Image 1 (cartoon, rainbow, N blue to C red):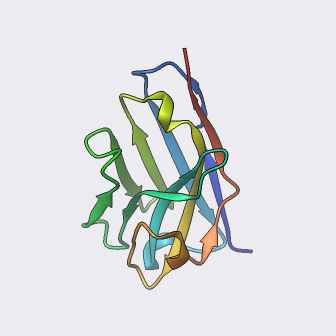
Image 2: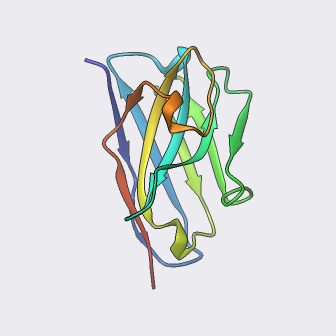
Length: 124
């Protein structure tokens, strides 16, 4: 069964850091583009960052550039989102998603498989 599982969320103070993990089971991530998305209460799901299957191309939303970094570990079949200098407005449920064909993108409609999400709360 194809499954994506996010982990690493939690409560952190402004300015702090978290690393989210997206682990795949039932399939290998090598052929997929992987994206991270977030959804805050009352807001639409928005793209945060993505990485193509090659691992050589990444892109992020302007709101997180310079603070968030996406990476992948092929041996562990896992994609990470390192989040630094967190702000209260980063508070949301974070999801990872896989897109067939290896490309990425910040539009959630491009993705085929989704995890259940992990809560990130930035608050003092």
